[in-house]
Image 1 (tube, one colour):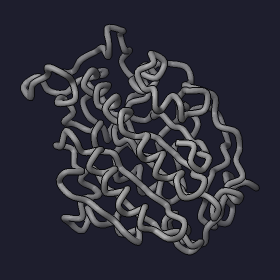
Image 2 (image 1 turned 135 degrees about the vertical axis):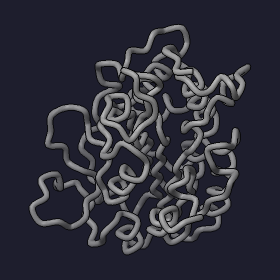
Image 3 (image 1 turned 180 degrees about the vertical axis):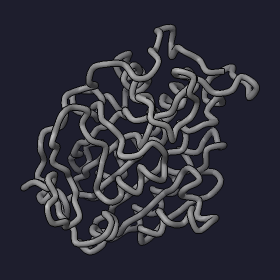
Length: 295
């Protein structure tokens, strides 16, 4: 079923207007890279409107504690489906603030004429961010989720192949009701055994279809809708604090938590993603530092 509510409040076709929290202040990433463990979490397929509604309603207590001002920032994705968005994100093109720019980037490959490389941008001389961070002394780790990270095919191996170490198993995939817990357990084993700084990337599959099983009382024949999408995000919120604890235990941490793209549940007749719709292009984003031991 397509569904048009999350918790009794109507959700408009597409994402709601307004911005979820103010854009983050310009950071000097040159002061962070090298001194902090780095965490990048993509909440695959998460819609901005659902994420914004839940955090305002107090239904995401862990993320509300972590995000600046307790709110998501409204941004535009660089791609309308997982592969395209991650190819951009892992080259340093994070989701862009949903307001006229230009907007300085946190990370950028050395590229003559770039208009979004600023004084605080950490510039790397590599084709991708994991490669650049590896040159800076980071151990780079990918914990995959959706099929583009499953390493079962050449295409499913392309993005994981950017990292020094990558992991995927069926328990991490979209059909597992406990996928995020399994992913976190893997990340904990890897990071706790690392000696130097770590760049940990986790592609969270729990939001992606199918997600009906996260909604209490739902059945397979009911299908997915905005309510089950919301329930999946609440499931993620219950466990994501373990990642924040992990990535701020050994040294200070810097985290980015965002969606790679949204998805349509009958909005204007559309279902799914890889389409040019507001529900797909507009995504939630947050970035923050973590004091060592604060989580």
